[in-house]
Image 1 (cartoon, one colour):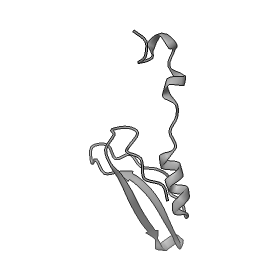
Image 2 (image 1 turned 90 degrees about the vertical axis):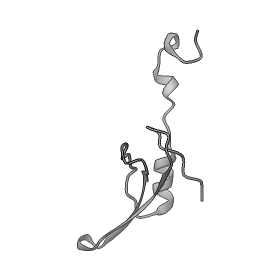
Image 3 (image 1 turned 60 degrees about the vertical axis):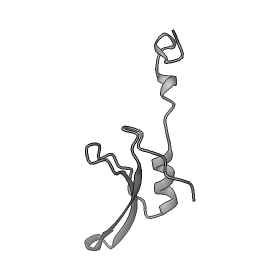
Length: 74
């Protein structure tokens, strides 16, 4: 299994949160930031690998920033 990437919002470590919902007969996996001030979390999944893939997926932020404002421009 792949390594959990840091939080995309604050950069802190993230870890597994396993939930059991007895009233719905559902158990799931989720990854969340451990920084209490951030509280970012991924989506629940019945499959651990899917929850990990969803958390580790990142958007290419540079693609959404005009070339004149990118960090590599001076």
